[in-house]
Length: 226
Image 1 (cartoon, rainbow, N blue to C red):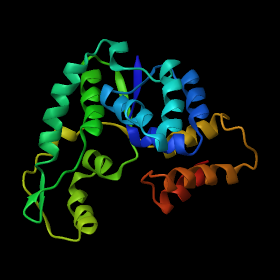
Image 2 (cartoon, rainbow, N blue to C red):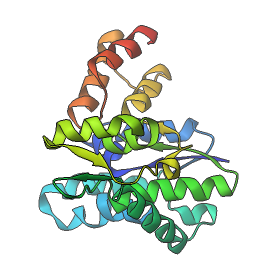
Image 3 (tube, rainbow, N blue to C red):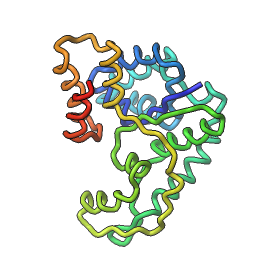
Image 4 (cartoon, helix red, strand yellow):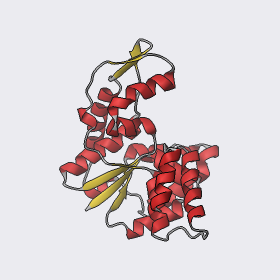
């Protein structure tokens, strides 16, 4: 058993670019599950369905959920209260790491943290997993926390200090972005467009413009191996 855990950011990027059909095709060839937590379901389906501006996108994602392309953690025997308990711990740690303008900096949301919490619980069950997330802060917290201080200072235009250097809680997670997912879809022939490298270029720039934290250099590197 293996799983990809989807954060709201990656699903929104794919949805806004009309790439949910490709995601559905990816699920068919993936030997495992695509999972969203209850918190992410609320963010991308339940709440948007009540807002006219976002209703259509929510309906598209709900269809994937109804078709079991996306499933809840209960499908692998994990209860929501287990995730909530782990989520609260991770949010508390993350949002007490840095101080800017004399107050703690809010780094991650409960939705993002729920993905990490689920990842930990899946590991406990010996289920290999990877988290699909496009948001830069969360990815840096997992992959390069030592660089996060500089990023925050640039974003907030203020001096940021480390309050508690407690990064160990965020080690060991594996991260993938929508950029890598569309690359896989492209390589597997799931994107029904012609023109070769132009298609890959268009896919990568599309997800970048819809929130995927991928640099121009990274796009160039992916195109080289594409």
